[in-house]
Image (tube, rainbow, N blue to C red):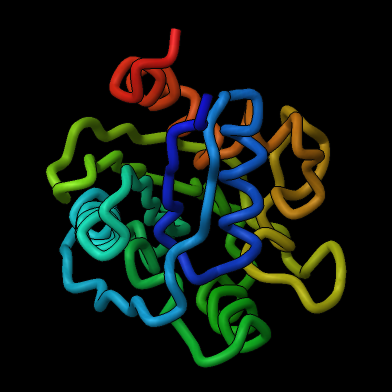
Length: 194
């Protein structure tokens, strides 16, 4: 029996691998989006951006697709950088430097990673969406070199940064993992998998 095909609408290999592992136990065949697909994120929310990506991938591949959009929201910075996290600065090093400079020595360092995930059918229609939030606080310096925002985002519950979470912890505590867990039952139902 052929497994149903699901396209993960992302060009980021790390994100594709992470989502694939979260969906790993499901009896489905997963593929990443075609390299020719480049979707401009013009939405004003994570959900809107995730839908734009999932819809485009579904219509191009004629398969079910799942897409996610996520960002870091810092309370002290009124929720910034939010949906602009990927475009906050040119490099990961610059992003970290910019956010740590903005925070300075304030003790108010609470933040959250927010993720929205959208499931589209092969016609590009949204079937279901889900959101996940991971709460934490920002360190004053990265926990390890060459990281992204994940290297400064401390999760008290795990006693480590987001970037140091194991795959099991990412699925349980991570914002993308929480969204994927909420979406999984609907994915099974829609693909006719019991």
